[in-house]
Amino acid sequence: MISDRAKGLSGANHVARSIKLGDESTCRYHDSCLSAGLTIKKTRKKQDIAHVDFVVNGETVDLKGLKNSHREGKVLLELLNVQGKKGWCNEKGTPVWVAFDFGAFFLHVKNIDLFNLAKKKCKIRDKVHKVEDCLYKGYSRKGRKDLMSYVLLKDVLEGCEHWFLPYMKYHTPVEYV
Image 1 (cartoon, rainbow, N blue to C red):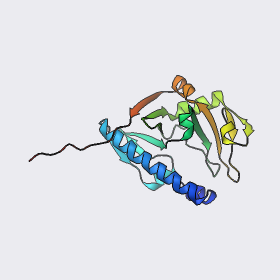
Image 2: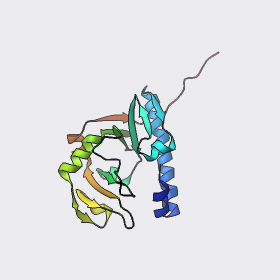
Image 3: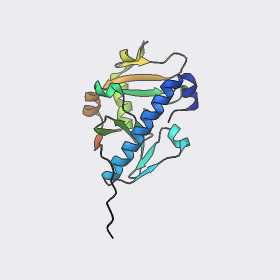
Image 4: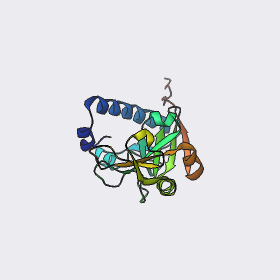
């Protein structure tokens, strides 16, 4: 879900593309959870904007759509949102899990572990001006109060509690008469 503030700061094509990718990831994630036998509930818009997209087996999950950076072995962490408030990667560990769409699977990572990894690895005071340069450094977009940093996927896998959910379509069984 994209906040109204973020929509106002982005071009219409970018917003439309982001919404489409997010909707696709949402459907794929929902199907995958059902196929794996997990209980899943979609949250309402207010919770969505508060970084909780789903409740899966009783725990909160924020879903991050498929990104080019995932194919490059990097994960983008949002420490502050566009308004300068706490981002989805935070010390409170809310939501409990962040699920990253990698196409063939979803990688679930314990949020508090991501935050601790960022504290350990990233020098966010070393600011860069391009997102592609923010590996272990701070990056804010022009006209926004956000703060982000990339970490390597291998760092996440080595330093954070995580689990994988393979992408599977959900098929309801055919009922015979």
